[in-house]
Image (tube, rainbow, N blue to C red; front, top):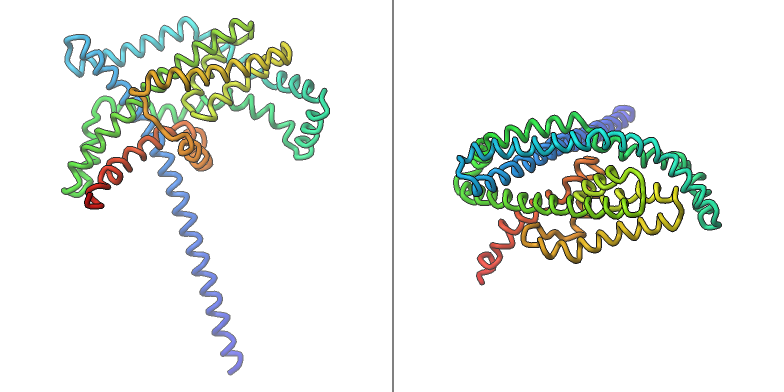
Length: 346
């Protein structure tokens, strides 16, 4: 009797273990599915942004020339294709050569910078601390690897461009499909919200284009005056990295500072001052001038989104954190904040 009695608690304990294991497995599977679906949605968002850009250019051409909207859309695509082809013709080979040279040079410049830092007592202690943790030898490779592989995600780029093509050719098909999934009472609100999100993303795109040319041109001009090598590549990196708020400008400055250290500590400090000054000018002068055309986003929210999305989705999460925050802000404004007076009876 006692053996039979002892068997029941043991059996119950085993059942609890199996139930707990099953729950944990379901949670893990749900998280993996969510991460996969979210990563796909990020690629979809990137495709939508490109499609919105082409339609914005088409609307501008349609307002300038008496052509049908579909013809204007075709002209927008051809105009961008011509610009890209011209850029590749005039600077493509040189840019590719400079990018390869930068990837090969960065480890050497990092070692040179480490040797200079080791000349000071504080710097030597910092290097000893890094070496004791096993991270010193990896740092140079990580810096070089970031700039040589970040923009080489060919499979994702192919998917994004394919989605952008479909969204550009027939945007109403997909927007109407999303509205059709909503309940009847929410269809009007959903249609209005989608139109508002399109306007928000269009404003964000305008801000990115202005920032790209402003940062890229000023950075290239400043580095050229300082006599640094690989100016074209460094300016392009600075312009593109500007699309990643907070972290992008810091990452863009790393290769320029490392190259400047080859010419001396004073040159490196001037480069740091140059990059910092350009960011200050953009924040103090350029943003107020184009504030009506860009989306004003809280910096703290963008940093939180970048950290969270970077941990879950990597590069694309960090790159698209700002437009995702802009989308969420618009949704909250339309569905909650704008209805506060009605909800409170004011």
